[in-house]
Image 1 (cartoon, helix red, strand yellow):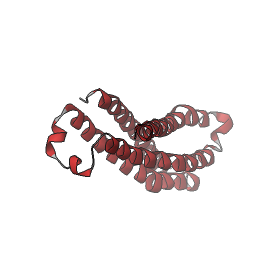
Image 2 (cartoon, rainbow, N blue to C red):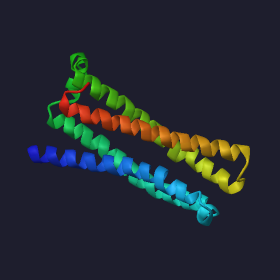
Image 3 (cartoon, rainbow, N blue to C red):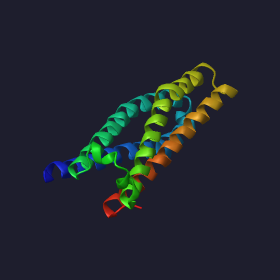
Length: 168
């Protein structure tokens, strides 16, 4: 059982690194490079294709995070029945876990809306009518959704650090 737990924690950390690292790379490396003159003309296509690839990696990472999160809880003795007991949520550990689960839900929803609705519409609009008010608005909404998702993911990471130390 200990080996399963250690493997699950390792996989959980690896998936978090892929998820957060990918978002940081996109925002701090790829997007600024694409704004420079040599790549500006092809930036929409490059960002779209990179985004599609990261979408696959991202959703695999998110699925692994949810799956290994439940495995980690179960191995530590927190099954479905215990999760429905109110007293568990009264401890610092339970409050940290509860907050983490709320933020995870928000990240999953934001990611789905960004990846399958706003992002594709923004790219289509950038290809169809670059420089219009609608294009700029969709691009900004997509950009802010990505930033908010990263911020929430970093909060989840901070909460995860508190869990083995007793929570909040």
